[in-house]
Image (tube, rainbow, N blue to C red; front, top):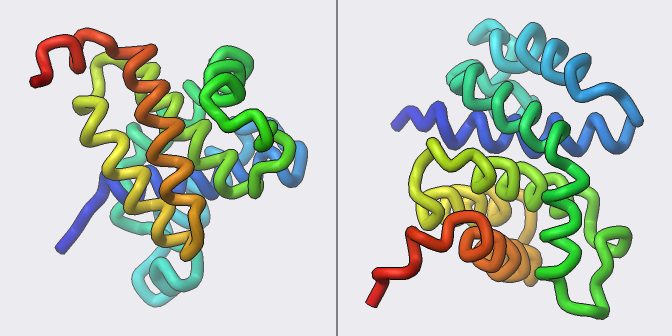
Length: 157
């Protein structure tokens, strides 16, 4: 089963991690991912080699750009949603990238419903982590969703 939107989210987490880790402009990382990982050829390997040829490029690009452009605001919201004992700097860098990607996508109010976004990033987190990180991501993104998209939760019963 093809899941281009999920692959886009995985690629966005990886790209945000790479941009932070290498201290590189996210636009350069977007270009590298599109040319070398997303538009890879079938014989160049799949997910296990870090390639996602089925990823939705416009979604991937929009998540990474929004995360970069809104990083200060999104990071501030993430920091407030985290337990006091877990400042942003203490987070695993991949978890930090996943929270930024999820926060950026929740920022985009014209995207899928917040609950869909949270579930997608929960799946992505389970791909990277086997401990409590997915649960932390779920809690933080849920708090961000309530802040950024309160109307989606006001009529929930």
